[in-house]
Structure formats: structure tokens, C-alpha cells
Length: 441
Image 1 (cartoon, rainbow, N blue to C red):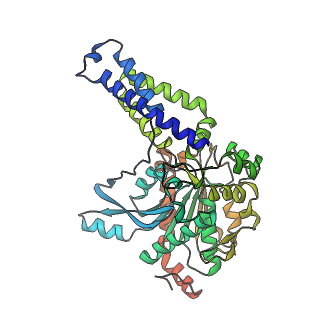
Image 2 (image 1 turned 90 degrees about the vertical axis):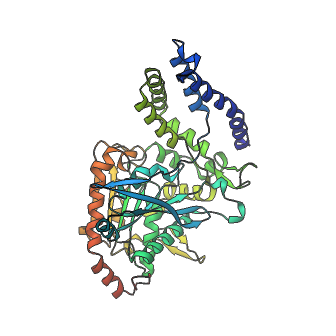
Image 3 (image 1 turned 60 degrees about the vertical axis):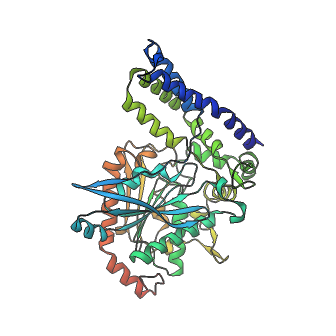
């Protein structure tokens, strides 16, 4: 019922949001008589702020048209490589007329970025993708809003997430012979499970696996997010945050954790910060500070755009990752695509080098949670492991913004490149083990 009430309220507010937007433009347009009033800038700013607070935020676009590599401008074409019921594997193909640059790009590593399915869209990693495109072939998991997925497309479980990641890894391997994987936040756990299962079966695993700010072991330095998941019962989550999609969407009847509830939780974590940010935005509009005003718009266009998560997936993540800690206890069984249960054994990973990245001030995944992956992957030599703690960085700073570009990316790039160059030896070892992946076996 709550979902229906929210949708009714949103529909009711739409004309008011449209009015506020029109009024803001009317009071700020140079050709308008109302713009000559001494208070017009303040009135326009007030209406603009109302519009931003009332509007419905749709899924943003990646909108990456070009990237600069050295002195060259590389054109980017975005396409869907694999379309699954709950996810699109999105490819960013690079084009250039510079033949030397083209040959160089053909030899660069192929990277699968596994984006979070935890409220926001994959476009939250836009800066991650844009930066990676300088030196890599880039694919990303673009998760779909569960309310747009009809019931006849089936259910979506945490096991399905793991199976999707494995399918995407195999796809890159079939095209390029090998690949690298980067997971950010929530997907560090299912990605580690996916690679572990592939290793246990004797499949060729990615050359490298980079895990950034994720709850591999949520018992370490628990944050407010961890505490909520650990201190409430499984039944509490099922009874209080799960609702059915209303009639106005293709996924009508599907059980979901609604995006608007998740957004409320995001804001409640730092209400003073958001209030201050909106007040600063109001002042920027009054003073005509277009640069900072536009930066605010871009941030909140992304931050306020949220998706519904399928209830089965969400509840299983709460139980497996934050309540029973199945991964670190070695008790996690995943149902594969054939319906058979398989035990997740990170210790079976032998040839995949792995790197972990944490932010010193991360208030989502606390210190040590991601680094815990090293102890689990005991079969990987220490010489093929790396940990990076980014001083002064919060959660978002390790994959977006200046610290990501200047401090984190160079080390991630060099880590991938070092093991990419060693690929022939890794592939030879995989062949001797009887690997089964296309392009390797």
C-alpha cells in the first residue's frame, strides 16, 4: 500500500514541479518583464529549488561521447553486448582515425566493471568508466530497475547475480582470450563468489580481480549501514521494506525493495549535509554562480535517481553478507545455472591476481572489510596481491572524483597492466590444468 501512496503523491506533485520549473525560467529569462524586478533572482532561485525537490528523477545516461588519450580524442560508441532480464552488459567501443593509436588500443586489456545493484544506477560509476577508457576496453553491468521487469521474466536471486557475472566473464574471455574484473562496493562479494566457483570447476579465471570498498567481511569496522543490516532480523526487513510494484509499471506485482525507500535511507544517513548542500545551491543561484549550481544539479541528478531491487535478491544479500557471513565462514552454497548447489571456495583461486582498495574515511564499507579478501584467497601468492588504502577518501572518492583519477586509477591501471603482460604464462598454466574457457582451452 505504501508504494501506491507514494506513486499517487508523485503523480500529484508533477504539475507543481512543472509549474515551479516554468516560473523559475520566467523570473530569470532576460527577455521577461518579471526578470527586471530587484527580487527576481531570489524568486527564480526559490522556484528552481522547489522544482529540484519535487521533480521525478529518471535513470541518467552515461553520455560518454569522447575521451582524451594523450593528444588524441577517441570517439566512444555505447552498445549492449548482452541483454539479460535484469541486466544489460554494456560495452564502450572506442574509435579513432589514428592507425597507430588503434593498433595500440587493440592490445589493451579488456575490463569488466561490475557495478553495484544497491539503489543507484550503474551511471554512478560514470567517472570510473570514463577514466578506464583511456587504457582499457571497458564493459559494465548496467542493472535494470526491477519494476520494469515483467513477472513472466522470472525471479532474481543473489545466485542469479553470481551466474550473470560468470556469463559476462566468459563472454569477454571468448572475445579476447582473457579479461580483468573490477567490482565496486556491493558486488565485491558476488564477484568473488563467481570467480571462486569458476576456479573450483577448473575454468580459466580473470587475470586480475580488483575489489573496491566492498563488504567482503562486514564484521570488521561495522558502519551504520552494516549495523542496520546486522541488528534487524531477516523478518523485519521482509515485513517493513518489501512491497509489490503497483499497476503503472511493467513489473506490476513483483516484490521489490522500492527505490524511494532506499533514497530516504541515503538522505537520513547525512541529513545535515544534504540540507547544507541545497542551501548552498540556493545561494549559488542568487549570486549567479552557474559553475557550482551546475555541479549541484549533476550530482543530485545522479544521487536522486534510484531503482527498485528484486526482493529475493535484496533479502538474500542481507542474510548471506550481513547476517550469516557465509562467504567468510566458508558456508555459502550458490545454485548454478543448471540448478545444482556449489560451495564457494575462494581458496581455490590460484592464477587470478587480486587488488583491494579502501577509503580511509569510508562510512559505507569500513576499514578492513575489503582487505579481508586476501586472507580468503589463500591460494594466490602474496606477490600477486596488493592492498591500497586511500588517505582522506570516503566511499565515493575511491571510484569517482579527483582522488580516484589521481591516486587510485594509476595504481589500478599499473596492476592490471603488469598482470596483463604476464598473460601468456598464465594461459599456459591454465592449459596445463585443462581449462575449459573458449580462447584458452
